[in-house]
Length: 443
Ligand code: SAM
Ligand code: SF4
Image: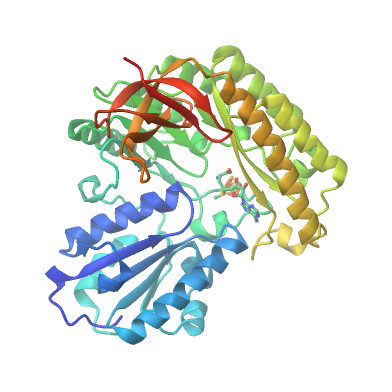
């Protein structure tokens, strides 16, 4: 890493984050470590002495976007003195190869190595630095150090890594095996967030339903129950649940913990049992649908979302049609859908990528078109209702329009004469589109 000319106390840093909520949460933790070391957060790469790029390797496209962003940073580095660190999943995957390919990078840190950042800031004398090892226990970053973007809704990582090895997925290779935070540390963090005025907690992990306290073995239901008792917290969410670990008992625990939102992201990936088997998901279409039935029997207002991959190796037209029929059957509030892309080290990448790019594209368009229609129907059924919304701020285009999310995690844009940022507010829904609800503050 290039030694910064400035005193460390004045060092300004900028973090660019690719990928999911997990990466957003990691970037908040990285910001905390850097600010605790005396550095100051900056709002642009041009004004910074240190730029950290937090990367995502889940799909080829996210990697392509990273290389284009790094190209811009290479140009910036020619015009000013700046240190560049690449962290996260792509860093873990390519390690020194990334440095060979992009020699302007100063340091590389894998997801299990962020605690080393303060050491890099203090001791680095200009040499390149790579740290991508694994430790058996999860590194607790003191929760006071986490630098959160929101004042009202907090991401809170409860576990790292994944043991599932879905045949398409790179995550077990880039984030390692499952490791869990101690329940008492999680609870202390939630209590501290409640004292600061946070109202919503979003628990994060690749497979939260496999959570086990490392000491006591207490499970995710026990954790939810205890968070539910923390005064001040009003909404609790979690992501991601793996269908194979989602039990009837857990659904009952979810219903009992009254602050847990009736919203569930339960990734199916494909509606075809034969594709699910090739994906190594550990459940069939029928088993998944049974779970949806008991969830809706217990909590009929549950807002469901999912992830879907189209064009997995060998996916036939009939198998794809089964995914479309599943969407019609479940009627999700929202879906995240992707074209399959082969990833290094995964089992599926050793299979022939049989579905041509244009066909994957067609399937994705058809899938998204169907979901758009289904979502519009669902959203229309909410017009005329008054719903509770947690407002995250003003719309950039119109100062009288605010935006937020309801319990089902749907986007709600609404008119308000008063500033209601960071507040719960009742909104009367007056109109909708497929991707958002529109309304006004209810008197
Ligand atoms: N642990 C979570 C789960 O099991 O759903 C999230 C995993 S991953 C970060 C998020 C989503 O990316 C997956 O649910 C899957 O739909 C998608 N994904 C993962 N690998 C992919 C690949 N090789 N090609 C396309 N989509 C992929
Ligand atoms: Fe990837 Fe499967 Fe683990 Fe999710 S459960 S992170 S899709 S391997």
